[in-house]
Length: 480
Image (cartoon, rainbow, N blue to C red; front, side, top):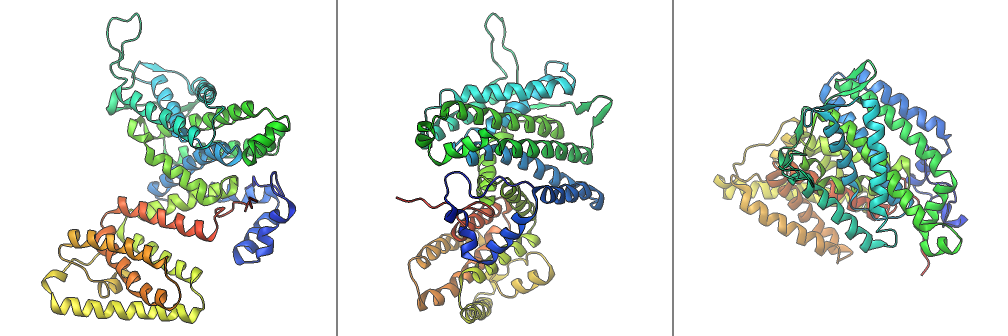
């Protein structure tokens, strides 16, 4: 896949551009090998894998996950344009996504008995989304940082409030109230996408349609990023004042970034609503914005390849965490991976892991012997890992209260570990790891909605400590 981080790039000297090479670690070597491949080869590999995906997969559920991943990828690419390239902290991005979805629903459903052809509806919505992006960007073109974030966040919340209450609006000159959006109940029965005589009505069809749109957007963004506008956006991101002093039209560049990002989000909204056959206010809440930002940050803001990799990582992890058994593998796998990454030498790691196993066995034996009635919790899941943890972790009969207290203690223990070093940190890691397993098995694994957010948050924190620039982002060194 084409990458959006040229070398050395705007705002970084040659030494900074070669920073990963100077590090010489495994991640840097893998990144260098990937970057050495011609962009067409990288992109071709991704295209080939995606084309074969519905062929080798027979489950409609898994294909639906693939469609959702592509939708998230489109949203993340649009946000990356605004945040990663132009450096604008836009917290109202999901409102453009919702605008595209609601516009398609109004023009292609029985809400007003309009069933416009898709070839006319989608281009109109994309253009309207771009104009809305420019309209929102116009009053915020002089704002930066927190002020821009507050203004755009207000826009996102205002949009959700509007569509939730637009079922009783009285237009000027109209005698009665008009139901525009059906309020909290949303609009259902949205038409499928029609392309001439072809109607897309299956999950596989929407996968291929979304993938074609994804390929077109990636190609367009790759060309745009290598154009004068793309280079100007990166200069704007690094230092707006310096860019303005060099004669760049800073305000116009901001408006263009808002317009292009909004157009991509609006286009994605039409596909999402047609796939879902309906649209509801809850589809565009703050949780969606946080998820998209997590994908962009995880992959590396500014890198198209990194952003897509972040999307795949986060979305796959979120899907795996829906059921206890795969979630258990992810949890313990992340714990072990974090220990292998940070703990040196390895004999110290072996002592910590061995001590954790011994500590758990002893705690399990004492708890089941001294309080058998309170430790008769139902075994969670099966498989090898489930069988082992059921005989290692204390499973409480009524875990709610004790589990909540243990969760608070775990947070305090983690905070305390960050303040100590040396021998005592190694000693205290052992009960902390076991406490984490206890909280996971008794409270989190049975609440997948909470566990998913915690795991993704831990993944972000871990990565940001190891690679602040994200998986494929480029390191930037600021001189005070």
